[in-house]
Image (cartoon, rainbow, N blue to C red):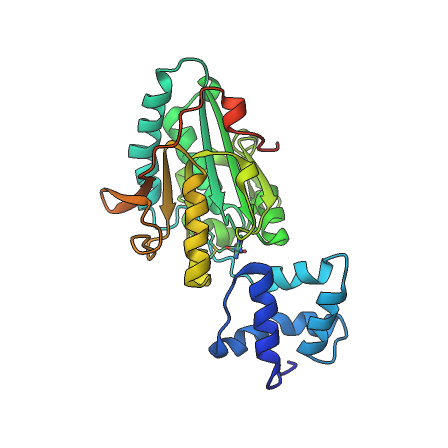
Amino acid sequence: MIKLQPGEHKAIAQYIYAISAIILDDSKGYLIEGRLSSIVAELGCRSYGDLLFRAQSDKTGTVRRRIIDAITTGETLFFRDNSPFEMLRHKLLPELIDRRARIGGRIPIRIWSAACSTGQEIYSIAIVIKELLGDLDRYDVRLLGTDISDQAVARASRAHYGALEISRGMDANTLARHFERAGDQWKIRDDLRALASFRTLNLMQDFSSLGRFDIVFCRNVAIYFGDRDRIALFGRLERALDHGGSLVVGAMESLSTVCPQLEPKRHMRSVYYQSRVAAPVVRDAGQRYPAIPA
Ligand SMILES: C[S@@+](CC[C@H](N)C(=O)[O-])C[C@H]1O[C@@H](n2cnc3c(N)ncnc32)[C@H](O)[C@@H]1O
């Protein structure tokens, strides 16, 4: 493995911060080596400094995207931590549907998995929706999964999972109901796959064009960011919540000092956040939700 030379860490860490907001302090030299050395070798670079030069001078962005794919931690599993999905099933979705049912027509449900990794989170959400609501004809369900990693987004969109990934969080009955075999893998059934769309998105960039959401899952990503970026991110997520919308964060994350405009609310063993500032109710769904691409 090509070793990181003294002096290279700072420049590489600054570059990775600039393209992703991920902080790699001095203790993370092993991570840079472990994750980037194969790109250094494959591109025939002599050093990490050389890789940095290649990334910065590559106008196509290919090297930058490869670095992002390699440096990000896509650890995820189906129904991760379980209780947020119980809360979705027993609290967030029923309350949302109650509110919307009064308006009449097909009930819109917009959920965003921000930092969706390879898709296990958004398909867990899709499964909860399907099992709770059954026939979805009465609902206009749109799920959006975004992640900074092209590779993760492509895998999420493909919706194929190996036995090991399935064994992490998916019980046999749920598997039988919502997946079908695809060679030696499992593929989520088309009706659930059709609820979701995906795109590559860096959460540090403006995402206001996505419109507003009823529920946002943004879990286990802000832990990689510094305080300033975390504050900015949750401020913008608060503005992405529709009237009465809810934000769900990771089990080890708390927003009390990060985003005071978000009010923590408890359901059983889970916490979700709602804006203290009531967003205006917009009745025209097209206006409220500009475009989640199919
Ligand atoms: C540990 S996974 C979490 C996946 C899922 N939310 C969960 O909790 O199981 C973190 C994800 O955040 C993504 N990520 C890291 N930095 C990001 C950024 N600046 N913008 C968007 N996604 C980012 C990574 O690519 C990775 O897929």
